[in-house]
Structure formats: C-alpha cells, structure tokens
Image (cartoon, rainbow over all chains, first blue to last red; front, side, top):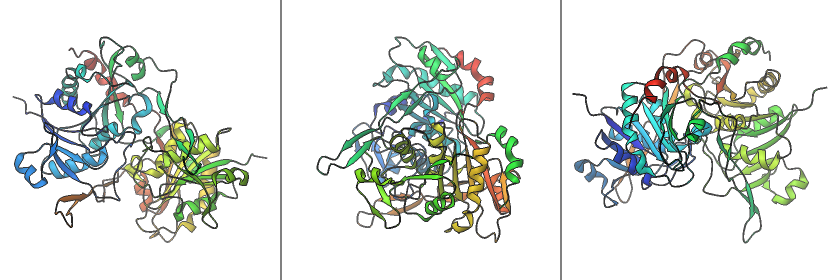
Length: 273
Length: 273
C-alpha cells in the first residue's frame, strides 16, 4: 500500500480566498494537508520575502473562522495557519516550523484567481510559492485560472488529484516546478490535459496618472493590460484558448544562457582596466 | 561617431543608498542617465509590483536632497526620480513616463550592497530591475557586491563602463540579462573579469521565534544564512572567491524544461477524468 502523501498548501490570494478552499477540498481525501497561507492578498508579489518585519503565524479554524491560541494549536493538531507575509514566507515558515522533522512530499499553491500562464510566472505570488518549494528541493505545483473573472473552482476539484498524482509518479528534475492553468469558464467543457511549453503572453503596466484630491500633485496607478503575441501552437496560451488544462514544467534551478556564455566569455575575460 | 547611449538606472537599496550614487558616477561621462529608484529600501522583494496602491513619483535633486514640484521638474530636465514602490515599479514608470517617446538603450540596476550571485537572482530586487528591462526587450545589467559588509564602491567605478560597453557591443539575446557581482573587499586587488555560469549558493531562511513583549504570543523573524554547495569551477561563486568580477548571462525569457516536457507530455495528455 502506498504511503499517504503529505502536502504543504499556500496561495497568494490570501487564506480566506475561495481558491485555496477548493484546492484543499480537492486533495483532502488523497493526502495529509497543512495550509500555510498569507493573512492578506499578495498578488503580484513575485518571490518577495519579508526581511525587515517579523511574521505572525496564527492557527485558523476554517470552519468557524476563529483563530485559536498558538500554543493550544499544537495540541489541537492545527493544520491551517495564517501568516502575515508573502507566499514564499509561508513556505519558509511552514517547512521550518511545521515540517521541521520531515519535509512534505509536495508543495501546492493556488488555486489563483487569474492567469499565471505565459510569461507571468516570475511576477506571480502563486508561482512563487511553488518556486520556494523547488528551492528547498521539494516538488511543487502552482494552480491558476486563465480567467479574469471569478472562476468556477468546483469544476477543477476532480482534475487536481489526477495532476498531483501524475507529478508524484513522474518526478520532476531538481529545480523544475509544474505551472498549471485552467481554461476560462467561457469553455463549456474542459477538453483535456496538455503538458506544454511556456507561452509569451504577459500582463504589462498601463499607467494611469491622477491628481491628489487636496494637494493636486500627480500620482500613478500602475494599471494592467494583457500583452498578446504570436504564440507557438504548443504553448500554454494556445492550448488554454482551445479549452485544455495546461501544465508547463518551469525550470528555475539554473538560469544560465549557455549559448551567450560560450560565445562571449573570451572577449569578456580580455577586458582590461 | 557613436551615439551617446541613454541608460535608465534603478536599485533596491533605495535612492539614498551609496551604491546607486557610485553607479551614476561610474556612467555619467559615458551616457545620458535617468534614475528612477525606490524611495525606500526594497531588498528581497523579487519581481514584486504594486497593484493595490498608487505610486508617488517625485523628482529629487541629489546634490541638496530637496524634492522639487513634479510639474516644475519637466522644465528643469529632472533626471532623478524617487518612486514609492519596488524596482520593477520604477522601471515600469520610468519607461512609460520618462522614456515614453523612445526606449533607453540599457537598464542598469545597483550597485547592490550584498551578493546576488548563485541562486539569489529571483529573490533580488536589484536583479528584478534588470528582469523588468528584459521583459520590455531592453538590454539590462544588475550590479551587486558579493560582500556582506559595506563594499568599497569607489573601486568599481572604473570597471562598470567597461562592462556596460561590452554589453552594448555584444548584444544579449532577447530574454537574457547580465548579472554582475563584484568580489568581496577582502581581496586586496580585483583579479579580472569572468563571464561564468550561475552557481548554487543561496541565502536561505533561519527562523528566530520570539515572544511579543506584552502579549507573550509567538512571532518569527525569517532570518537568513548562506547555504553553500559544491560549486562548478566555472560558476560565479567559484570565480568570486578567487577575486574576479563575475557576469552570468541569466535567461528569464522562456523557462520551459524541454527535457521533462518531451519525456512526459504523452502520459499527461492521456489523463482521464
């Protein structure tokens, strides 16, 4: 009989967002779960970590929303923690405080409201939760919805255990995580699963200049718009548009551009000062 | 005669940190410079961007530290701006507000107090400034010091124009930035320049549990320690230890792990629900 896996869950929409509840629900019969998630929304924080402020870590009872006293929580076997930081902070504290004796088998982050397909991965707090797992040599999956509106998370609960199981049975190399996106709910039916290459689509800024109501001085909202590109037919963006669940194996372990290195290391080494 | 390059400068230690002054000083005779840097320290924010708050953008007169009125600044040709956000925010606003007619030739970030060598690149606000340039298809360089103490920035002012010139004469592929680290000042003399592969060294958390002075409840400082590994002799970490300036071409354009994709796309596509 296979050992029941242990999974550490986080997200970036915050511990009270619906997506993480559905992720928990999707996996609760399949694995032992610990949730360490941000107390507040942390969208677009990337791999930010909190080094200039301390972090509160409070056990939460999801069913009645009451936080219990920290020292009681261990006796109660609390498995849901609210942390006053970023997704990467949550994984760091979860691994050190909760899983200090034995690492979990998997880190899972999401389900994010909004797309982390294409080139959005490095901005995403959701993907950062998975990157932090990979930095600790723990396999990791990020789940997001390629949908600007509130997605129908219920639909995804049946698909998530299949994807998690595939990862556990087909281990990823060190430094690689799986970035999963669900298609928009405009597709009446999910067409299937595709492991794909990363697309080019990207949220970019769209600044909006305004004036302070009393002082009149200028300020800016960064704003956002989707930048689209001609996409490879095997990219996540292309398959999402066809109604498929996509999974990109994203490598963050070693980022050297070896071609550029080999072409230019001699001329660089010959610089003289 | 070659056109004088235009360079957009940022950092993560904040606009009043010494490193960015030395970076400006190193390049002022070589290029036209615009500084858009965080009003406050933004270390370890990664590629975080500010989407839930507006951003103030104030022109700063570095010589007397007085900020002038925004609308006067355009008439004065102000080239130094303090922005109430992250390094990525600074590049986004700099490109849209200051360089709205013609993109700069280069984005340069730093000089960071502390190492961004090895695997620290995705946590670093300094490197994020360069990533944001690359996301806009602008060549970018991050400069940092592999030194835990206040580095001797004066030493680096002669080296920086050589590296910038090398990048302008040997363009990097789309999606690749140059991550430069200076060796610790414990080396009495810089030994030379090396373009290298990315090492494995990494700042990791080292949590410190404390108790609130009045309530007694637990809180955590994330803490930090350097995790060291057996390093390839051609890695940045190895060459920094020998006293060389290192430059890693870091690719963030497409992060697909193609080997894993090719090995597993068939079994993933056959998942059934």
